[in-house]
Image 1: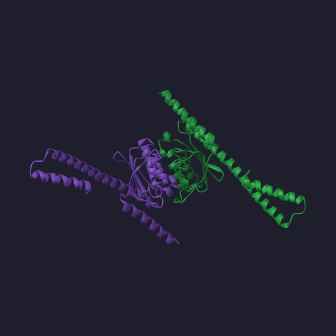
Image 2: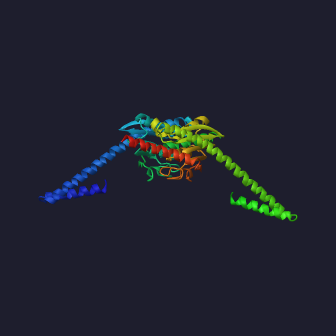
Length: 208
Length: 208
C-alpha cells in the first residue's frame, strides 16, 4: 500500500478514536471529511490502474500470440496490436524475411492496417502494444502517426529506440511525445526471444 | 583549385625551371616523378567527384520531378528515387494525405519498391536521393534497410533526422552508418517547398 494512503487511514482512524471519546470539533470533522475524499480518490486511481494493468496484459497476450506466428515461419518473434476505443483494430507480426521488406516489422504492419481501419494517418487515440522495444524506424513511425501511448513487453538493449540506445519518444524538438509503459508480460516476451535464438544457434550448429 | 594541387604544380614547375638550366640530380628527377604521380591521383579524384556530382544532380532532378507530382495532388512536395548499379530502380513521392497513411512518405514508398525489385530487404548497394532531409521514421528505415549512401536536396531544420534535430545516420551503437551528401539541387528543392506553403497560406486566407 502506498505511504500517502497509509497516512490518510491512520489520520482518519485517529480522528475516529478521538470521536469515540467525545464529540469532534467542527474543524476536525471537516478535516476528516477532506481526508476521506482524498483517500477515496487514491482508491479510485488504484482501481483504475489495476484495471489498466489487466487490460494492458490482455492486449499484450494477443501481441505475444502474434509474435509466435512470426517464430513459426522462422522470423524473430515480435508481435504488435493497436487498440482504439477498447478494441483491437490492427495486428502485425514480424515478416521481414518472408516479405523481403524492411517495412514488414510488426509495428509497421499494424500501423498501416490501423490507418486503413480509421481512414486517417493520425492514430491520435490509439495505444500500440509491442512485445519488443521498437527500433529507430518503428519508433519514428509511432511518433509520425502521433500515437500517444505505447506498451512494451521487453526492452532491446542492443537496438531499442524507446530508451535503450535512443529515446525517440521524448525528443523535445519533435511535435509529438509518447507515453511509455514497459515490462508488461516481460518474462514471456523475453523467453520467447531467448528460445528462438537458442533454437537458431542449435540449428546452425547441426548444419555445420 | 585546392591548395595541395597548387603546391604540387608549383614544385614540379620549379624542378622544370631547374632542369632548363642544366641536368637534374637523380634525387630531384625521382622527386618530380613522385610529385607528378600525386598530381595525377588528385586530378583523377577530382574527375571522379565531378562525374559523381553530375550524376547525383541528374538523379535529384528526377526526385524533384516526383516531388512536383505530390504538390499537384496537394501534398507537401517531397520526392525520392533509389539508384542501384547506375539505374533508378524505385521511385516515391509523398502521398500521406492521399493514402491516409503515415507510411506513404516518399522514402518509404521508394524503399518498399526497391526491396520488391531486388527481392531483398537489404538495400546494401543502393543510393537514396530525397529532396528534403528525412524524418525520424524514414531515416530509421534507411538505416534498417542498410542503405549506405543518401543524397539530400535541402535540410529540414524543424524536423530532419539526418543532422538537424538528430543524426540517425551516425549513431555508433547502431550496426549501420550512412554516408550523407547534402545541398544537391538545393535551391530548386527549397523553392518548391516555399512555393507550396505560400500557396497553401494564400488559399487559407482566401477561404476565411
